[in-house]
Amino acid sequence: MSDRAFGFRTRALHAGTPPDGETGARALPLHLSTSFVFDSTEHAAELFALRTYGNIYTRISNPTVAAFEEKLASLEGGLGSVAAASGLAAQLIAVLALAQEGDHLVASTNLYGGTITQFSVTLRRMGIATTFVPGGNVEGVRDAIRPNTRAVFTETIGNPSGNVADLAPLADAAHAAGVPLLVDNTFASPYLCRPIEHGADVVIHSATKFIGGHGTVIGGALVESGRFPWGAGRHPLLSEPSPGYHGINFAETFGEYAFLMRARAEVLRDVGASISPMNAWLLVQGLETLAVRMPQHVANARAVAAFLKSRDEVAWVAYADLPDSPERALAAKYLPLGAGAVFTFGLRGGRDAGRAFIEALELWSHLANVGDAKSLVIHPATTTHQQLSDDELRAAGIGPEMVRLSVGLEDVEDLIWDLERGLAAAAKVARVQA
Amino acid sequence: MILETAGERRALLDRSHTVAMVGASPKADRPSYFVFSYLRTKGKLDVVPINPTAPAIDGVRSYPTLAAYAAEHGPPDIVDVFRRPSDAPQVVREAIDAGAKAIWFQYGVVNEEAIRLADQAGLDVVVDRCIKVESARFDGGLALGGLNTGVLTAKRRRR
Image (cartoon, rainbow over all chains, first blue to last red; front, side, top):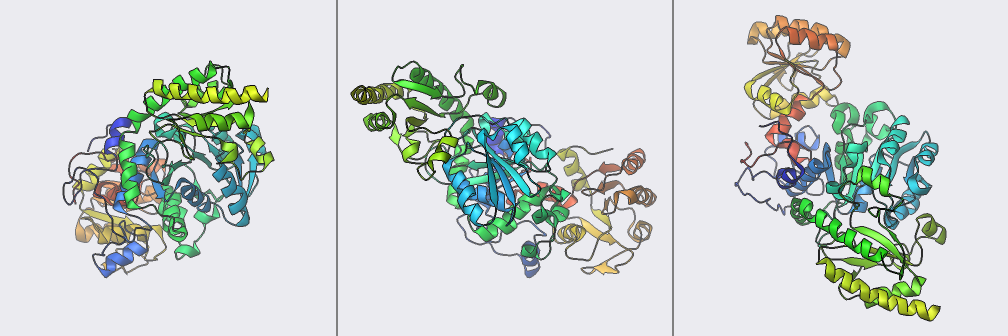
């Protein structure tokens, strides 16, 4: 084998997906099999004891899913990956691999609404408390870390606020306290940002978005750097004998693989939120063309943002790539190829103007997703974030006038043509109000 | 020579046949047992425990010292070390005396003196790596666990 460090596009096509050893099939085979036969009783015993590698049952691992995991881990520059049924499932698995009742997390306020409720409602009910730090600012995060804090959590590009996390000092602040930094990198994708290169320890994806890229399947994954000292004592779930796995000390037995092994063999196994091999297969197809699609997503997003910025009907545009964005410096540091293709803007005329705008659009799909090849639009205050209280809504930087766009791969002139129709409808409402 | 790259580790595993595992434990929850059991049941390496307190592990006869192993089997291709870092220089001296071609220090077994001694004696040296993980990196096992092997090829994977 060669020790060449292959480039991103080469890894997107080849990492994790060599020709099939059994058949020589060049494309990744889809292994739709719940279970896998053992070679012998001894082989079965070795597999169940985690002493050898192999497949038992697709809830825990599957060859097609493993190909997706390895490809994503390679693209993020990680040690390995564990895929899950969705991004929220991957995130839950990451947290439960590190934290239990009585433990604590520190998170930015600028997060996806589903993440906020997972932390502030479901995890809190399980006895894992979260302190939310406004904007995820470094000083606030440092001050919020307690002796029982097991992780710091942020998003590379906040959904929907669009602010860019200052990953390197956040990682430093977390590491100084012995705590890992978990980063949801969904909006950037590994093409635009690789948080591990900036100090992150665990990267989480909703692969449903740009990784899949075509709005077809739900899936998620975590990727781990392999650098965090899991055995240092801060994470007893990894450094003390586990009753869930006949007394294994994961850190001692698996070294740098401790987190990944526990996430799969105990947490994924027990939570049961496994991804379908069919979905993993489609996500591999998506990863193969990620580096082709993302530059076009970014180019279209830049053109749409510049158009909106030029219009009187638009009160503000929050896209970190715009020259006058307060996020510009952080975007230049962490997102040099572009700040993604999801951003928000505010319509003059508030909530009613927003409603008129969305209903006048012909080409932009009104739905609750991002990262499709098709352009998408939503009004967060009445949809994705409706479960948040007014205070949580304001803390997350969401106003009634905010519209979120996920800019797709259509001809950008057609996207702008459609937006002009929407703006005209919004302006009519705004004039009536005035 | 200190082997730094995956390609060098793969070549070492490919050209080796025998492994003498210093500190192999018969206890099922010990990391050394995980590695011993993997090498015994998978792949082509012939692994033998070096442990003065266990007469045999899973039916494989154990030797009290590397010298006792070498007297019967000849020099081992690889001496795999599961010992405290402070014990490592002594293990290296015994490995050199036994004619070992390579020494493999497992996770956490890092001792600069031991590394220097082995390197100066002309042994191939692997530091802070697991021989089970590196074997599985190249035989396809690691890939089944969703782990990043770093192996990229358009050739059919060896079985």
